[in-house]
Length: 63
Image (cartoon, rainbow, N blue to C red; front, side, top):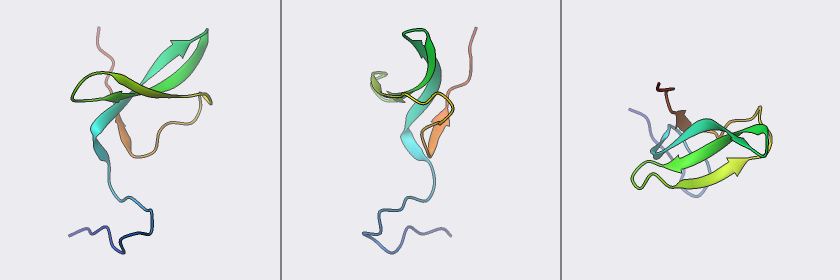
């Protein structure tokens, strides 16, 4: 079984479950956008388009 010890070392093991990320366009540039899964509100964007948020699952494309 996995553990997250030692506490206080500022390291996370595993995925963040209450958030998702998706590709979006901001001012003509492709960016990664972080979304709160419970409320659906957007939380943050990455300026560097090649870098994703660490440990946050991707949303599947629909449509």
